[in-house]
Image (cartoon, rainbow, N blue to C red):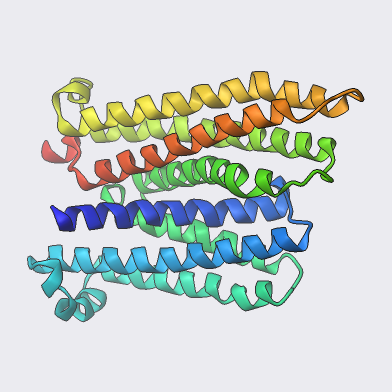
Length: 308
């Protein structure tokens, strides 16, 4: 039970770190580029933390996968790790992920000491996309290979939910709180509008790929309520529906409100922004719950696999 909890926490942290790194790249390239020194420093530390968490969670996964492959306790898995890395497909993909992580980490000194240019964004974006592909490949979706339709669809699903939830988390807890009284209302409105557009596009990707994944993994519609996998999928779908509803409320109510507020010469305070911010924090909590549900799903054998 303790080992299962550690494995689940490690996987949730893995997905969360991936979402934050992808969101940082999107923020720097388009959503809300950092302009003040404090914003830049804050994002540097967040990137550092996300990379550290990504490395630790990957190591946890390696230990637990090695234990499963060797049929031993995670406490006894260390002796089997070299063999797993050398002789298994999982080990090969894990090493590829390690190289991807090193490429991203190599950008830290450049970013930390004020290096400019598009290179760090390109490397970090390529690194996150590669990491997402390798995470997918070592899940049930990659059972038949890295370039199969099932794996590529699941990869796009992981990218979509990382971009969607990562942007929400970053905006709710880093970007919006970082705006001061001197920040123009037009800039706030512009970034809120971009966040809504990003969430809408990512949501479309999540829905399309999610329908395909569900169809492939369930096998039969009755498995949606007759299997543990299907019941957990229903919980995940319910959480996604809540996040979709919050996103729709933001897009069709709060975004227009904030845009009107930004052009109102007689405005007082930031009430529309504050309401939007509170709802975005709720959205963030729902996203973490979705990640937990996704991790639990990944640990279960889909009904379509059991039927084989």
